[in-house]
Image 1: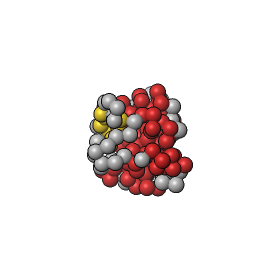
Image 2 (image 1 turned 60 degrees about the horizontal axis):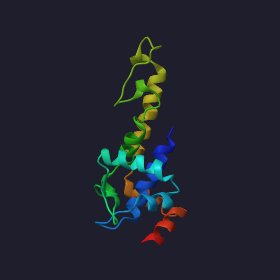
Image 3 (image 1 turned 90 degrees about the horizontal axis):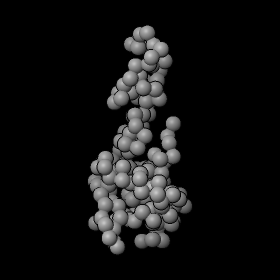
Amino acid sequence: MLTQRAKYGLRAMALLAANCPPGGTISIPDLAQGGHIPPKFLEAILLDLKRHGFLTSRRGKAGGYALARPAERIAIGDLIRALDGPLAPIPCASLTAYRPCTDCADPPSCAIRRLMREVRDAMAQILDGTSLAQFAASAGTEPAADIMAEMR
């Protein structure tokens, strides 16, 4: 299940992708207002995304955050992994954080693991195949986009 943290992170990243001018930044208060995100929670999310290499920041009066690379080169799956961890619904189905179940005698033949691996693969195909640019374009009809347009 997608956490509120990841939802806010995706919302903020879409706002940055759609509204941050080249060479510019958007401040935390503007992103918080535009995305209807609590500012303190957003600050922690943005710092984490910066630590993972998705954002850059600038201090001062004209400071704020910007994408570290073009939105076309940021996969939604990578953002979710950075914010929420592995995509797999159970640890034994994860490719990046595999952990065997304590109650499973034979993981390779476990029907639950096989099914959850298929779920994980289908999710990864969609999320890794969707760029932030595509996501931001599809989110353009949300009210937050109107708010951000007024800030430009």
